[in-house]
View 1 (tube, one colour):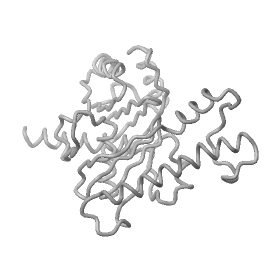
View 2: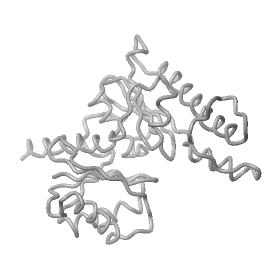
View 3: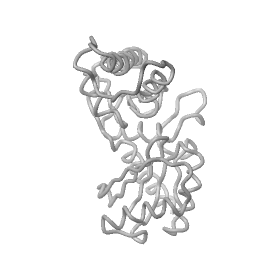
View 4: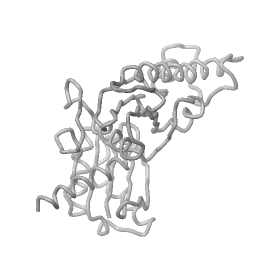
Amino acid sequence: MLLALDISNTNIKFGLYEQEVMKHRWVVSTVRQRTTDEYAMVLSDLLRHAGYTFADIDDIIMSSVVPPLTPVFQDLATRYCNREALVVNYTLDLGIKLLVDNPWEVGSDRIMTIIAAHHLYGGPAIVIAFSTATTFDVVSADGDFLGGSIAPGLAISAEALSSSASQLYRVNMTPPRSALGKNTIENMQSGIIYGHVGLVQGLISRLCKEIPDVSDEKEIKIIAHGGMAQQMAPIIPEIQYVNQYLPLEGLRIIYNRLRRSHNERA
């Protein structure tokens, strides 16, 4: 079985695949201070609950945007699974072009989601990640990465507002009954959430106009994923698809491509 790991700033997602099928998936909080052994015990418990052990894992592929945890999980793969983890980065032959000024700056999380988006939905497309940051990744019709945009995420915006204004406090990230708030909580929710809606819609509009070789903007797919995608998609009509497993699916697709290339060379 294939174990796919998506290590982000907020959460770590595990996907256990048998061929093309995700048999199990888990999400745990990202804790930078945890050691290899601590994460191994977490993963061991998750596997055991699903009826598996480390011995059932044949291969491991991972993406990490948390540099201190990359060697931790590489060590876990070696010591507990007797496997060398394949770490996704821009130097691998992934079948796409990174058409940006500095390809080495493109995070592996963005690489795997654009690959998954193009593979599953086609292109051109805009992939929006509602996570710690809200990122916009633009995919050409051929599946190449054209660039994008990065904005502060909802949680960052809410935290900044409550910490910088002494009479304001943290609120739940749920849409208020209307944009016209009638109390402090609704005022904050309106500004944070509907303000973010305006940001997302504005960037979608601008990015669509800048994608080359597009005769009709309606052909551009808008795909969302990330922790806040389920809450935001219903109030952003431009979003056509929500796929919370996009990063893990990207890792599976990348693994299959690299395995085929290895077998052909062998």
